[in-house]
Image (tube, rainbow, N blue to C red; front, side):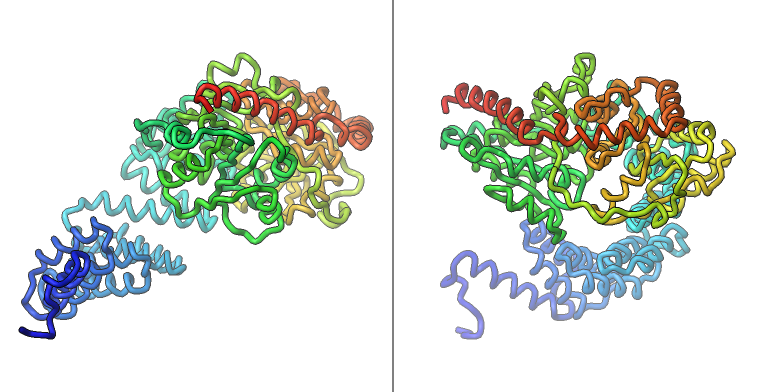
Length: 630
C-alpha cells in the first residue's frame, strides 16, 4: 500500500471530502489532467455549498498548469471567487491576467473596476467602466448583449460618482444610461434625488424617452416627501417599494414561536431597531428617551447596525441601553430570530424606508408589537408594522386613510428631544460674514428639501424685505450655483445669499442665535433642525400641509407655544415672512418668549413625554401578553 496517500476508508466523511478535494486540486495542477469543463462544474458545486476557498484553489491550480484558448474564462471565474472572498488585490490580478490573454474581455473589464473600487482606487475603477462604455472593438461579451454591458458600466460610474459627491458627473452618467434605456427604475430613482440634492429645478426633468409618470413612480419615498404633499402619492410610493424590494414572508410570526417556548413575563421589553444610533439626526434626538425609561417596568435593548463612529454621542446612546445586540453583518433572518428569542414585547423601528433600512427584519414579525417612530414621519407600508407614534397635529384624522399603521397618539408633541445637547461658544455675525444690521432669514435644512416653489417664495420675501439676507447651508457647489441663478431672476444679488459651511453639532447649535427667523421647508418640514432652533430660542416660520411630514414643525411650534408661526398656504407663509421681516421687533418678541418659556413648554418636557409613551406601550404590551397567555 502506498503510505503517502490517505486511506479514505479510515477517514471520517468530512476528512474524506477534504482529501478528495485536495486530490482533485493536485490533479488540476498537472497539465491536461482535468478539463476546464470539469473544473467549472466542480467549482460551481463547491461555491453553491459555500466552499469558496477550495474552488479558488482549484482554478488557481488549473490556470497555473494549463494553456488553452479558454484560459481567460478560467481567470475570470477565479477572479469572481476571489472577489466573493473579499480578496480584492488577488481578484484584480486574476482579471488582469484574463485581459492580458484577451484584451477585449468586457466582463473582466467590468469586474476589474469593482475590485479597484474596493481597493479605494476610484479613478482607475471609473476608467475601467468608461472603457466598457466606449466598447472599443474587438470586444468579447460572453453572450451578454452590448447594451447590458454599457448600462452596467454607466450605472456603476453614476453610483460611485454620487458616493464621491461628484453630482454633476454622476447625473451625466445617469442621463446617458437613460437615453440608452428609459425603463430603469433604480436609475430613475437616483436621477430624481440627485437633481434634488443640486436644487436642479424642475426636478422632474424628462430625458430621452422617459415619461413624467415614470419619474414620479420611480421616485424614492424620501425624495417624494420633498416633492409632494399628497399623502395618497406618498402611500403609493411606499407600497411600490415594499412590493418591489421587501420579501413576502409566509411563515409563522417569529414572536409566536418564541412565546410558545418561553411566555413573556416580568418587565416589558422594548427593542429599538436602527442603523442611525450614532452622529445622525435620529441619534441626536433620542438619548434622553433611552436614558429616561423607567427601569422598574421596562428593559431596553438596541438592535442596531449603526456605524461605530467613535463619537461621544454613540457612547452615550449605548450606555443608555440595558442590552446592545449588534446586527452589522448579520443577515435579516438571523437578526429577526435574535429579536424574537430576546422576548421583545415592543419593537420600535427608527428607520422606516430611509437609507440603510432593513424592512425584511420587520416582515418576519419578531415582536408582537411593531411600531414606527421618528426616522420616517410618513407611512412605510411595511407589513408587520402596525403602529406609528404621532400626535393629533402631525397626524390629523383625515390623514389616517393614507397610513397603513394605526396611530399611537401622544397628548403633546410626538417628537422627543435632548435637553443635554452641547452648545458651542456664542459666535458673532462677522465670523459668518453676516451683516450686523440686516434682518437674517435662515434655513439650515438639507438642500434636497428645498423645493423650487418655496425657494422662489423666499426670493420674493427677500425682495420685499429691504436689505435682508438668507443664510443657507452649503451642501454642494451645484446647489449653490442653481440657487444663485434663481435669485438673480428676482433681482436678488448673490451677496444676499450667505452660505454656511457644515460644522460640528455644538457650533451648529450656537450659530442659530445669529438668525432672526428660520424659514421652514415644505412639504418636507424641518424635524431635528426645528427642535434645534427652538431650543436655541430662535423662532421658525412653517407651512403645514396634508401629510405627516409637512406638519412636523407645526407640531413643534404649537407645543412650544407659538402657533402664530404656523401657516397653512404658500400665500399666508409668504405674507407672514414679509411682515416679520419688515417688523424686526416682532421677531425679537418671539425670541424673548422662547427665552422665557420655551424650555419649560410641553415640547421640551422630555420626562413627561417618555411617561406618556410608556403608558401607551404598557397598555398595548400587557394586552398582547394576555392574548398570548403570557
